[in-house]
Image 1 (cartoon, each protein chain N blue to C red):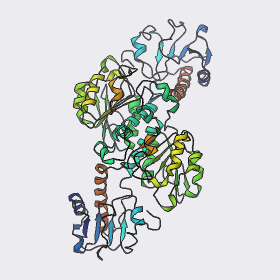
Image 2: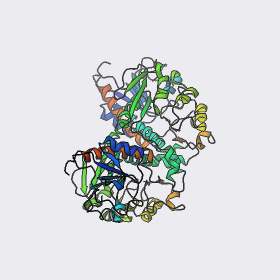
Image 3: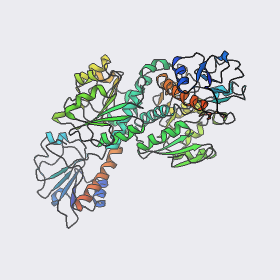
Image 4: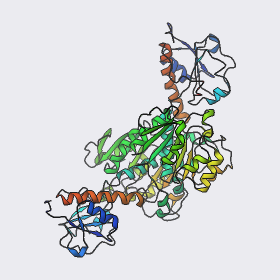
Length: 312
Length: 312
């Protein structure tokens, strides 16, 4: 990207909210409207309200979500091949990793069973109580969230086996498996965190066979996208006790309808896609906007450029 | 302690369980019965079944609990002033610290509210969702557990304010307060973990005034002893919403009777003193026995000598 000689003119949509206008200014940009031939567009909402056509002048669009599968499937990104698209991938990693750790710890320490109790009976819990100390955690998809999780797990004395596309060693993981060898990990790790992007390749990555290969004491946490797990197979495994339990911030279908069996299973914890709630998400996105506007204004490529062929 | 010229003769009671007999052998000792003039006694149970009188030959007694207030109040330790008494303080620190972190994270991320839900309504949770990232945690009593917790919190981006007797800086804490200045910490920290020994000085350390001084978003975790918190005051604060919630592995009274208000408060999490369950506790105690028998056999003072005047 060539260095811009003047302050970049940046539109903020769908509404020019104050905090984003300030973020643009902090990054060295000037906020203009979409009608004023902006160089870039900072988008703070989902694909539904996105403009049908972008002005020719727009060279960069910043999106506010870390996962962008909807933007790809709806063809919005492909419709603008000359525009550089960036996601917020990585901006929320620490927040979501903390939530994943919470679900994992709560599972391993049998918190759902405890909260259902109304009398003092420690013996009832003893068979269900584990620890992350000395445990091996399989991290499926070692992007920003997975990488943020590794040092948190290490501080608790757990070790990590990572799975990614390439098999290129993930820093801090004991071993990194390329996705072709993913089947090796199910019987090997004690617990799992799903943190891969939702792509056609990762759809129903965890199904009946994978669940059957896990240890009966395994907790499965999903903070990525619901589509990565075969929900019916999961309900079956949780009902049969094939695995110990699941902590799900995302589900398929999502929203999970009232009356779905996952709501009443004692070994399922559901958080309604709130691992990255507005109070934490907005300031993190503001920070990312400042960083990327600064880069754009200096002619440096913004972070988290979307790779259309990879799907994230 | 003078170096012993021969392998120390060590009794294991109340029963000479295999794993402890093996631990004594691993440490260089020989297991004998209490009637065979042992040099030391490894005790694997509570004070109730402890011998009324110890053989004159016994110079050291190893106890299996980290907190020894019952042994002190029942006068067992004072009755044998020439014996060196050691607790298991520190042996279970990492396990209990992990449990404390679990309760803290589950509270801050509103897991109890989530588990009570049966429909997808993220907006309901948004006002209650916090993070440990950037939060300040007050650790009251920076012994083994508190010190084990600090790096776990640091890995999540939280900082620690510690309180101990002396005010001597605790490694990793941003600031350490001597107990005389404890009142400064209640409005200052975001959340609290109680990890101090139960002594006459720490009884009801947290009462109505302390709870009133905390932030309304504060979570209070107790993994020490129930006596450190005024239970009625806590029930009042949880009911009124003066603080966000509490995670209690220990209670006063303990066991917490059925029907006690703490069982039904939606912002109280009770785990029945199982932060250190047998499956984790026994191997950790075996390790400590090996370590201390090794030290005793070599004439080196065993770790965690009980200080009768301090009360732990």
